[in-house]
Image (cartoon, rainbow, N blue to C red; front, side):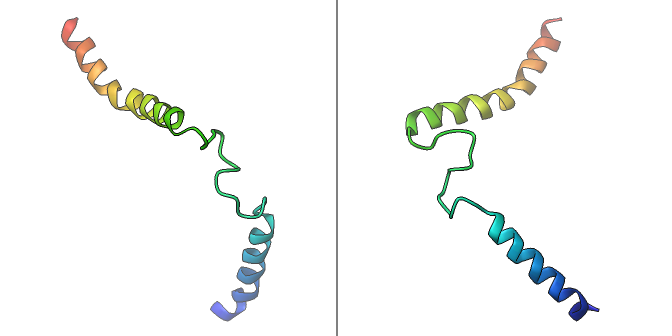
Amino acid sequence: MLPRFSPVIRNLSTSLARRSQPGGIPGVNLPFSLDNKFKLTALFVVYFGSGMSVPFLMLRHSLTK
């Protein structure tokens, strides 16, 4: 059963490799810039900090009711 699907898998992997543009430059397809380390760190702190603080804020809200 597996040899029957091997050409399909091989064709799929080569077409995916061809579609992955632009030539392997890291960070080109990200929605944020990797050039400024301090800005990137601040964005990560805000992003993950907001998600981590939600349970604590919910607990504080429920205790102060």
